[in-house]
Length: 179
Image 1 (cartoon, rainbow, N blue to C red):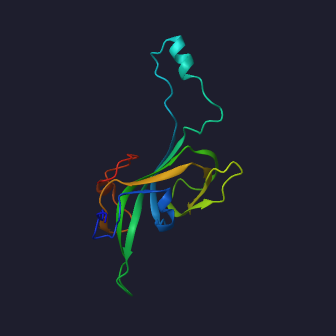
Image 2 (cartoon, helix red, strand yellow):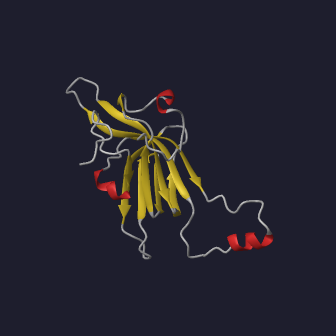
Image 3 (spheres, rainbow, N blue to C red):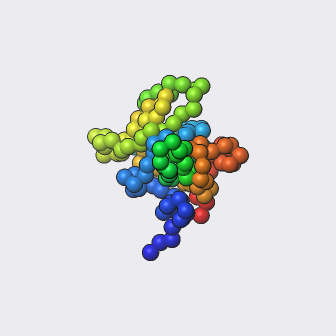
C-alpha cells in the first residue's frame, strides 16, 4: 500500500501524469502563467567539429518544445450546504506537456484571468501521436504532445479556489513536487 501524499485533502500523490487523466479533475483551475520553451541547443564553446556532431538533427525526431502552465490545482472541494461558501483544497502546480507540436487555438483575453475547464485527450493523429484539447474560460488550445506531468509544488491549502501569490510562492514552472 502506498502512502497518501496529503490525507486531509484526499490527495493520493503529488505528481500526476497522462496515465492519471481519467481520475484528474480540471474544472476551475486558475492559470497564472503559461510558457512554451525549447531545447537550449548546443553550448557556445564547441569546436566546429563538435558543433557539426551536435547539429545532426533528425527531422523525424519528436519536438523539443514544452508547454508549461502555472496553475492553482483544485485537489478537492467541500460543499457545506445551502447558504454556505464552498471551500477547496488547492495547491500551486506546474503542468508540463512534453514534445509539443502542431499548436492551434486562441487566447481570447489577456485582461481576465484564464481558467482551465477541461483537459482531454482527443483521438490520435494519423501518425498515432496523442492530441490534446485544453479548454478554459477565454482559452481554447489544441496540440499534439507525447505526455503531460502535473507537479503539485506545495501541499494543498484549505480555503478559496484561487491562492494568493504569497501563498503559492509567486509564478513558477518548477517541475518538482512537494514530496
